Structure formats: C-alpha cells, structure tokens
Image 1 (cartoon, rainbow, N blue to C red):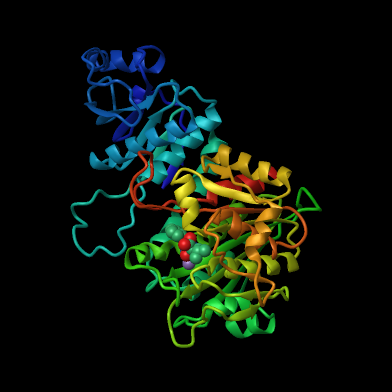
Image 2: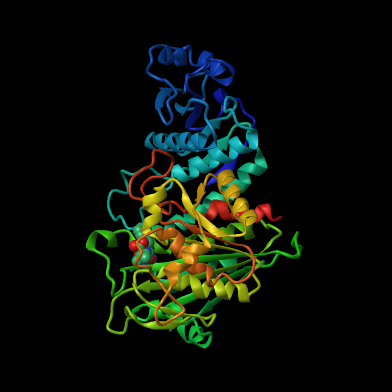
Amino acid sequence: MRITTPTTAPARAAADVLAVAVSKPPELSGELADLDSALGGRVEQIVRSGEFRGTRGQIVTLDGGSGAVRARRVVLVGLGSRPGADDVRAAAGAAAKAALAARALTVAFATGDIPLDPPTATRCIVEGALVGSYRFDRYRTTGADERPKPLRSVAVLGGDRAAARRASVVTAALNRARDLQNTPSNHLGPEQLAERAREIAAAHPTLKVEVRDERWMRGKGMGALLAVAQANGAPARLIGLRHTPSRPKRRDVVLGLVGKGVTFDSGGLSIKPARSLVGMKYDMSGAAAVLEATAAIAELGLPVRVVTIAGATENLIDSRGFKVDDIITAANGKTIEITNTDAEGRLVLADCMHYARMLGATHLVDVATLTGAVVVALGDTHAGLMGRDQEWLDRVRDAGERSGEHVWQLPLLETHRRFLRSEYADMVNSSSAGMAGPSYAARFLQEFAGEGPWAHLDIAGTADLARTRGDEFPKGGTGFGVRLLVELAESLC
Ligand code: BES
Ligand code: MN
Ligand code: ZN
C-alpha cells in the first residue's frame, strides 16, 4: 500500500474517501469549519441534531463528490473527549473500515484538528489505518467478490513524511506477524517459521539467518527445548537472525530478542481441556513478534546490533513425549523436574535465552504467550512485564507507552524462588502453590537469563483477541510486541 503525506487541503484531496477525526464535543473551527462550508453546512446540521457527537469510533458518512469536496464520501469519525494517541489509532481504524465498506480504494485523512504533535498524529493514523484495514482471507474460497478490495493508498494530509514512512514499515511488519499468528499449525509449523526467517534475511543485507535442527540442539545440550519437542510430528527448529549494522551507535550493546514459537500447544500429557485448546495456534506469537520486529529494524537500518532467537516446536501428545516426573537438563546445565508438561513455554525459552547470551546479547527481552494467569490479572490491554534491572524494565515500559503496546510490571521477587523447589532436581517447571503464576514463570526463566539486564514480556492476554476491544484491532492476532521492540531498538540508537 502507498502511504503519502501531501499538503492538500481536505476538501481538495483526490481520494475516494476523506476521513476527518473529530473530538467530543465537536467544535466547528479550523479544518472542520472549512469542510463544513464546503459541504454547505451539513456538518453543522448533523452536530446540531445530535446525530454526530464525536464519541470514540462513531462514524457518520456524508456524500462528497460535489464541486466543493472532491472525495466521493466524507467519513466523520469520533475521537472521544480529550483524545490521546490510542484514540487516534482507534479512530483511524474505524475510518479505514468505513472506507472499505464504501468500497474505497484510496483514503485521505485530515490531520489539522488532531490534538497531537504532527509526527505522532501521522504515525497513529498510519498505524490505525493499516491495522484496521487488515484482513486474513487466505483460507476463504468463497465470497471474494462480495468482500472489499484492499486499500491501495492512504494519504495523511499535511502529515510528517518521516513518521509516515517509519509507521508504514513497522505496521507492515506488525501485519506480517499477524499473518503468521493467524495461520493455523497445519499450515505453519516450526519449519515454516524458519522459512519466514530465511525470507526476512534474504531481503535485508544486514541480516544473517541461522536455522538449527534437533541434532544440532542435542549437541548443544538443549534438553529443555528438546523435551517439549519429543512428541513432535513436525521436528523442532531453533531460528536465529542477526542484524549487524555497519556503524552501531553503541559498541557496548547487543540487543537480544527471544521468542516463544510453540506452533500448537496441546498441553502435552498434561493435556488441556477441549475449550482451552482453541486458539493454541497463537502460542507462537512471541516468535512472530521477534522475527518481524527484526525485519523492521533491518528495513529501517537502525544502528543497533540485534540477535534474535525463536524456539519453534509443537507441544503434542505421543508415546515418545516427555512426561510428568521426568528430569531433564537444560543447555546451561541446570536440571528440571517436570511437574506439568503444559508449562512448556518456559522450557523452550530457557534454552533460547541461554543461547542468545552465548551469542553475545548484553540486553535481553523475551516475548512469550506464557501463562493463562497473566490473562486473568491484566486482561487484553496490557502485557505482563517482569525481569531484572529496573532501568531496563523502565526503558521497555516506556517503549511500550510510546508505541501503543502497553505493558504493566508485575513483581519478580527472590521469595518467588521457593516455588521452584524440587525434591530431586534443581527446580520444578510448575509450582503446586497456585499463586502468582506469571511471577513464578518469570522466576523460573531468571535461572536461564544469564548476566545483564533482562525483561520478560508475558503476552498471553494481548497477543490475540477472542473478542474486539473497541479499538482498531478485530479478533485474532495483534502482532503485539513488534512495535514495542522496534521502539526499544530505536531507544538504543
Ligand atoms: N500457552 C500457554 C499459556 C496460555 C494460556 C496462552 C492461555 C494463551 C492463553 C502455556 O504454555 C501454558 O499452558 N501455561 C500454563 C502454565 C501452568 C501449567 C503452570 C497455564 O497458564 O495454565
Ligand atoms: Mn502450555
Ligand atoms: Zn504454551
């Protein structure tokens, strides 16, 4: 899709749909007043009548196409009262959907009355429009004629050019992550994730790819990842990408990104109940996020070194599968007594985090759909943030706030260590205490986080939506993590 930032006045914009975001209560000043005159007072009319109140996401569509307004339709979209960046994203998403419904191929967004600085407004509009117009139709064989054609171009009138370019690169990466997430595990297993990493590397000269098989993992002693992979039909893959810019800003920083890539989580022998199995194709969302974020970092040419590791496997059931009571040895030499085969994500991450440190990662972030408990605690609005080194955690949180991917810190305390205690091994993989699930999982991961700052993002609640949140995202994968990680990488440049 083409993203442009012409300086055209809204009424003169040559697009199928002109979208105008309006705060609550609507004020007929600035660009909106100009547009109202061009439309012969029709905006004032629908505001007066109370039909349009500017409530967040409210849409009213007016006819354009007269002499005074070039666009065929004018979409007024509400921002709500005292709108912030999230409201602009939501409004842009709603407007993009209305434009698609009007069978538009081109949309222009007015920006004059949006109460954000121009780069931020531009970025939020591009993100909202690209996220809101995303579709996952790959597996529909019927109805293609009835569905709207994808948008061809989005113009942000008077927008900031650099911000538009950056946002279009990052949001395209976000949507590719959503494609990976939404693809079910019979079409996307570990090898298909690896293939995507190879494609990413082939497209960017600063990137090198590394794909390893189970034999290689055995050689490295990756007994934790391999235990999960034991029941596999589709063999596991360890996937690496390395971004080496020619002039990194900071010699002392190698950003390490680690993603959980469980392409389907049945729970294994500790099998999930039928209802909890639905949606477990999304258990590779962390891997999708770190791979596509790395692609965006390379495409933007960010001068920061990055090593990205995704651990890809299924967690299935088979007579060869790992079992409860098994004791396994991770790549860092620590032994783990298995008390629940459904606590598999932390096993995958354990070996991947250790490997990322071996490759020189100085600052680590892992991203994983790790616990149902984080969904209970934080819902679908915030990912759980835990880790070591408060300065690093603050930096991750700030990157989340700036990017619109919000995270909320949960405790990670030394006292959580008591839940790890095993009768026979260095630790158990699942505590019977039934308390503080996300913190316990993080405390387990800490055993494998090596030296230096480390942040753990539990995205089980934010990676995919079972119902809409009333913003620009429909049900399904959200690509959560892509925008935060790019923002974080930028903060190190
Ligand atoms: N992939 C799940 C976590 C999950 C749950 C993601 C719900 C999305 C929605 C993870 O592997 C898991 O099964 N975690 C267990 C851990 C428990 C056995 C300690 C859980 O949360 O129940
Ligand atoms: Mn599980
Ligand atoms: Zn899982």
